[in-house]
Image (cartoon, rainbow, N blue to C red; front, top):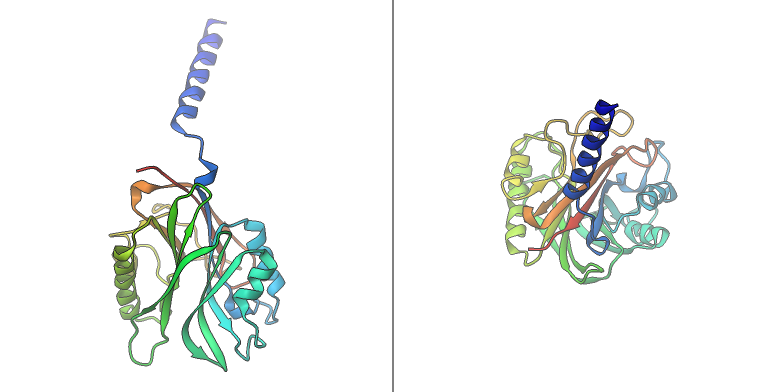
Length: 266
């Protein structure tokens, strides 16, 4: 009987200490961030189903979404403005940022936001001769708490040679330096943990994945490698509440990656 009472006391003490160690999040400062490469509106079945893409986004209940492989009025996307279509379906504010002209329209990045934009900027990223231009789309918005934050969505070079990704990672670090606000970076970086581009980024940005066991995000049918990320800065202004890889084998060839962050006081 004495041993049982001792065990219960230890358990109660452990539970109380655990509650103290895990502060209750301030919901007005919680930000649910989703990054999703949408395969230019196509699906893995070869059809064109924006409702399937929107369903993944809606079910994640994000506040900010970084979209990659976004078409704007291209022939292959049936002359749709994809980010606006997805914004209408998900009831989130849309913004498109061009990386390059393509197929009768444009191709680049998209951002969806639960909050209005008070400032936006589309940063051109460096690229070598003959390589696809890339961009980083930045929005500045205000959380329900009244805090102003910056959010950047991007898509780095996909080719085997790392040269463009290295240059693009350095440019993203420069964008961070220019930010006046706590900042989140999300996107398809086409680089695995420990690669040169990721080492460059993680000199300045804090990653949200488990370095000992990074959950893979690509391909969506049998994920084998992590190339989709959410990072933030400064390290002492954000707390990772939760991370989730969302595997939908139809909507895209990438898994969506959802990270819940809390903005902290200075």
